[in-house]
Image (cartoon, rainbow, N blue to C red; front, top):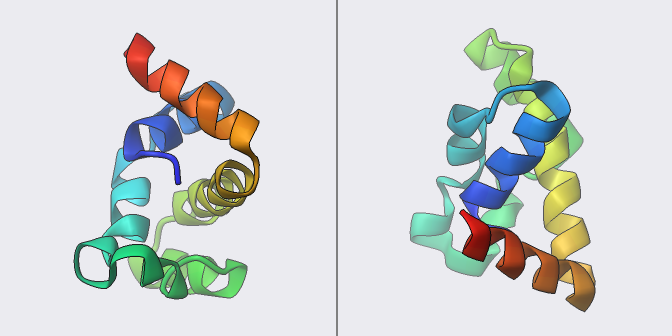
Length: 90
């Protein structure tokens, strides 16, 4: 899984801002659920619901990017290597 720093870099590259608040919120359940945290806030419907509750449309765009990055980095060993390189460059 990519770190919050990687999620923030992706958001900055695509949207022009890190969306750290969005990424932090989406992964907040990891503190208690560990690897099972993706059961919360990691589906398009859940992301849209959070955006409505928070009255912030950035939670849709940032959340969808977050979900896509999680899937991309967890399925592909090469993207995990890229994430480690990006982390090292920060």
